[in-house]
Image 1 (cartoon, rainbow, N blue to C red):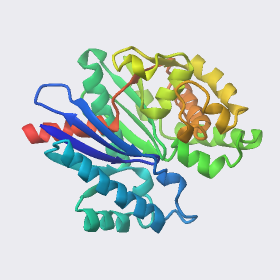
Image 2: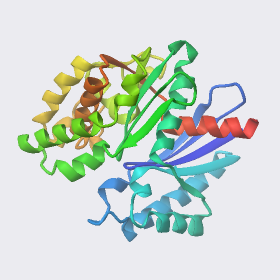
Image 3: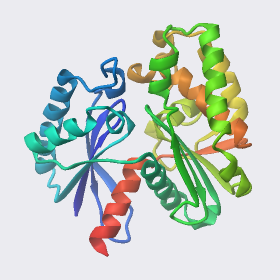
Image 4: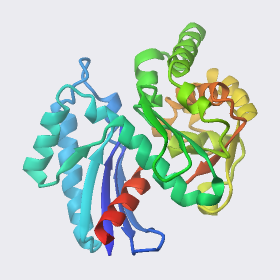
Length: 309
């Protein structure tokens, strides 16, 4: 069967179409996306503006046409922190349903973490033992750890790269004082929550997911995307220290010239690097393996499990 998932994230809205069969790896068949930059276009009070909602509805309509053209038999949609936390998020979700017929689910932060963990477990398999997963999105940071497909510990923190850039790094490049304040904020926020993960003991494999981690790994010398998903890619604690120092003095235009960094995400990459560095330091991890699957794939896998059970 062909499954389609519409992922409304803090930066992009992405329709992914996959060929999915019981017992087989879901294979990407088609991709259609736009940079809505939802988290950057919120009103000062955090509300989604009418203009942004208009663009969201219009793009979802496009996705419905694409899904039909691609032979999708089951389509579902979800949203993450930017829409979930907006004061008028529920109204936007209702508007999407009314005007497009798409039932949009706003995932909780814990569910984001759980579904990303599932994707990582399926990708690396049982031989990886105890997993620790670090996922830096635009609006939030998800952390999870455990031995099974359902993590023993899973939680979300408002430490997304886009959110922190918007709220705490007004300069481009940021001032040294703003950067110091952000570093302290990130580490204090993480330190309050990491105890359950540390208490579980050292992971057999620590994993990083999503675009920010992939970009940081690419800067550190990991293989480019065109080499395919099965090439091992890693990001070390030592790499991150150097990347943080390098990014601190660059504006977004200069960051966009680095390998693996898109123009749309260049400005928020420094905040993402500070979060990644803090996570590895406080979780006492020397290296992350980069997983090509994340939240979107986890939801596809769970959907397929339910459809074939």
